[in-house]
Amino acid sequence: MKQILVVDDSPVVRKIARRILTDMEFDVAEAEDGSEALRYCSEKMPDAILLDWDMPIMDGLEFLQAFRKLPDGKSPKVVFCTAQNHQNSIMRAMTAGADEYIMKPFDEMILRDKLEQVGLV
Amino acid sequence: MQQQSFDALCAYLKRTSGLILDQSKQYLIESRVLPIVKREKLGGLADLVLILERGQNQSLAKEVVEAMTINETYFFRDRNPFDKFRDVVLPKLISARQSERSIRVWCAAASTGQEPYSLAMILDEMAHKMPGWRVELVATDLAEPQLTKARAAVYTQFEVQRGLSTAHLLRYFTQQGDTWQAIDALRSKVQFRQLNLLSDYASLGRFDVIFCRNVLIYFDVATKSDILKRMARILAPDGALFLGASESVIGLGTDFAPDTEHRAFHTRGGVGAALGQPIKTPVIGTAAAPVGGLAARPILPTPAAQSPLGSRIATR
Ligand SMILES: C[S@@+](CC[C@H](N)C(=O)[O-])C[C@H]1O[C@@H](n2cnc3c(N)ncnc32)[C@H](O)[C@@H]1O
Image 1 (tube, chains in turn yellow, purple):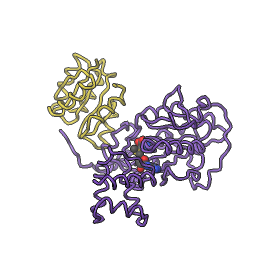
Image 2: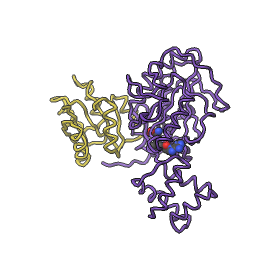
Image 3: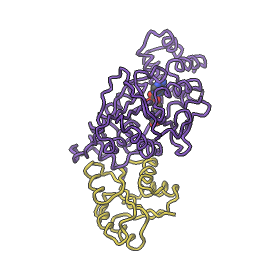
C-alpha cells in the first residue's frame, strides 16, 4: 500500500482528500502545514504528497524547496493542490520540482487523473 | 410526455442524424427539447415534431438535433489510444511515408475540440521526426455550437484538468481570467469543419489515421456498418482507425479488424500486419478539399503568462 501525505491547513479539504484517497487504496497521513509535513517526512518518507500552497508557518512552495533537499526527498511524487491558480504560480511550482498541479476547486476525477499522470495509480 | 410524439421525434432524429434514442434517453428530450418547445410557444412536443417533419424550419431542426447530441469529451480521453497513436501508429507511418512526407489525420466526432487538440499536441511533439512534412489534422462534427467552441479553444479550469497534464497545459495554453485558451500555434494545426457522418466523405480526401470515438454508440448496426465501410474507403491500406473504449467492430462487417497486438486501434480488413509494411500507397490528390497543408513545425514553448490574475474560486 502506497502512503500519501496530505498537507493542507483546511480540515475539510483533508477530509475530502482522505476519503477519495482511501477509496483508491492509499494509506493516508495528514499534516496541517509545511513545517509539520517536513518533520513528518524526515522521520518517515511517504510515496507521495498532496500539497496545499497557502498555509501558516511554512507554505507549500517553501516546503517543496526544503523537501527536495532531504536525503530521500527526490523520488516521492509531489502534487500541488491549491487555489493559487495563476499560470505564473503553476510555473514556479513546477520549476521548484512539483510533479503535477491541481487547481482548486477540484473533484474526484481530477484528483484520480493527476495521480495517474504521475504514475501513482 | 406523449409516447407517440416521443417515437416520432426519435424516428426523425434517426433519419436526419443517425442518432438512436431509446426510452432511457427520454430525460434528454425533457431537459433539452422541451425548453425549445416552450420558447417557440408551441402546444407541446407533438407540434414540434410536426414542424420538423414538414421540413420548413431548418434552423429549428438544426437546433433540435444539436440539443440531442451528447458532447461529453476530455483531453487524452482514456489515454491508451493516444499513447498507441504516438508510440505505435505514428512511428510506423513515419517510416512508411518517407517518400510522400505527408500524414493526414481525421478526427470524425471532434465535439468541443479536446480530442483533435490532444492529437495536435502529439503531432507537435513528434514534429522533429517529420521535418518539412505536410501534416494535416481535419476535425469534423455535426454540431455547430460544439465546433464554435472547438475553434475558439477556450476551456474552463475544470476542462483543462481533465486528462491534460500540467506540462501540456503550460506549454500549449494561456490563461485568460478563469479560462484557458489554446495558443494560436496549436489552434492553427487543426482544421475544423462541419460534417454529418451520414453524409459523403469524399471531399475530405484520404487519411492515414481516423479517430472516430464515442459516436458510433449512438447509431444502429446498419448505420455503424455503413459508416465503417465508407471510412475504410478513404483510409490508407496501412492506416489505423481508433474507436471509443466501449466500441468495437464486431458484427459490423469485415472492413476493419482489431489490431490484436496493441488492442487500441483497428486496421483495414484484418491486415494487422499491414501497418509498417512498405505498402505503396497511391499518392492521392486531396479531392477538391481546400485543406491547406501545414508544415510540421514544433511549437515554441509559451512565453511567461501575461494574463492578469484571474478571480479565484477557492474551496479552502
Ligand atoms: C460523445 S462526443 C465524442 C467526442 C470525442 N470523439 C470523444 O471521444 O471524446 C460525440 C460527438 O458526436 C457528434 N455527432 C453525433 N452525431 C453525429 C453525426 N451524425 N455526424 C457527426 N457527428 C455527430 C456530436 O455532436 C458530439 O460532439
